[in-house]
Amino acid sequence: MEVLKACAHVSGSTLCIARGKAILPNYSRPSRRLRISCVGWDPEGILGPPTGGHIARRTFQKTFQSDEAAKEAFEKQVQLEKESRRAARQARVVPETHPELVTFFMETEAQEIEYEIARCRPRLTEDFFSYLRNEIGSIRFSVNQTKEMEDRLHELEVLNKVLEEGIEAYDKLTKDMLGARERLTRLLSSKDKKATLLDMVERNEVDRSLLSLLDENIAGASSQGQAEAVRFLEKIRGAVVKYITI
Image 1 (cartoon, rainbow, N blue to C red):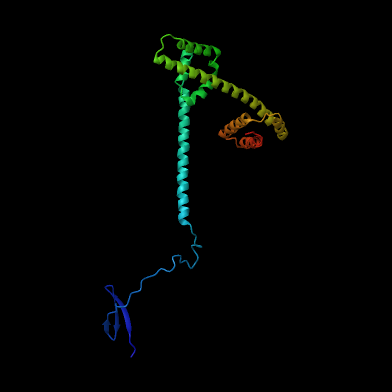
Image 2: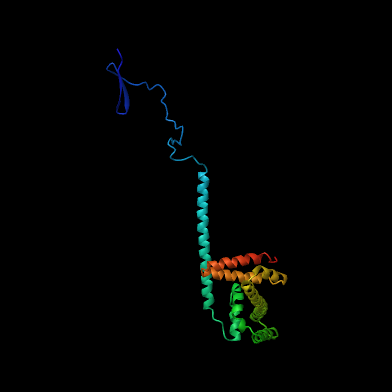
């Protein structure tokens, strides 16, 4: 007679029924553990071919995002510093008298001296320097010098030297920029720009002043959204920079 067997789950236990008797399963045999043989099971090909380098991609993405955040923070800080410096410059008022102008320069921060020399250039006349030299002489040849007078003398001598050198550099730059502006106008208005540029090279008229003026014009056109002018000037700059002597 054929043995009929059925399996039923009762309270989490498996019972085997044979000839009407319940027989407990044999737990002495080792149980099989579930083994995962393929984590990429995708018989329909829905997920596509497997790709590696996930950790590397995530690391690169985090680094890129971090760098972008740092770059944005740096640019924001630079912009804030520019605005702060611009506000401070606008708040400074150029004095009217020679003594006040001396005090003004002595209280100006070192990194702002060049800017103030350029701004106050019309006031830095020979008459002003005569006053400054007289102040230096009166302290230098004073009979009873104090420590404060010696310090004052040193400060005035340094200021005199800084202003003289600053004016010389500013005047030279101004002269160079005026010449560069004339040369740039001649180059931009020329029908044959290549021939004009080569002629300027032969005359030794292509220098950093011309390049700086081009950069200023490019920056100005860019700030005003003149894309076509920017492209044109950058093309001219690319031709000019080839002949700049380092």
